Image (cartoon, rainbow, N blue to C red; front, side, top):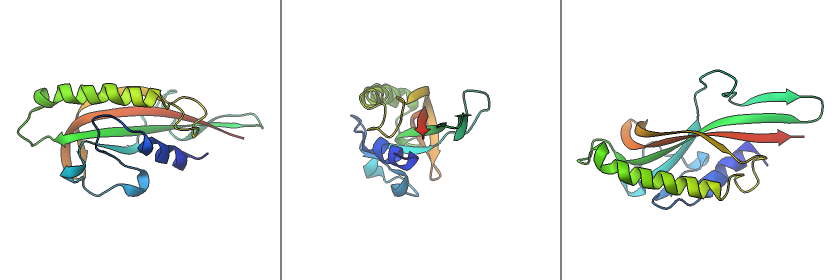
Length: 149
């Protein structure tokens, strides 16, 4: 399997309360309102340190490569300029977060694309930019591991 397959398999996971899940090859420049709430993949910015390797080789002993990828999956729930404030949409966002965790737990290796169950290292509700628009939502930061022999 490949990293690319992992992204395709991530987009295939159905999450209750989410209308659209984008694969890397289908990312729009802007998010159509009819496709919200949406999950958008991306790459986590490295904060440095031992737990944030990004795409890197951790061990090479002549036999296998163990590599990790830090991935973000951002829930864009609704535009932040809408009449509803964060306090109004936050209960709905948290419900989607719970649904997301259940869906990921059921397919932690992304249909075999990863060698270890993915780790969700951070969940951050808030306001996020996509295509020049700010959205209420949540950011899920993942840590993916593959063994390349």
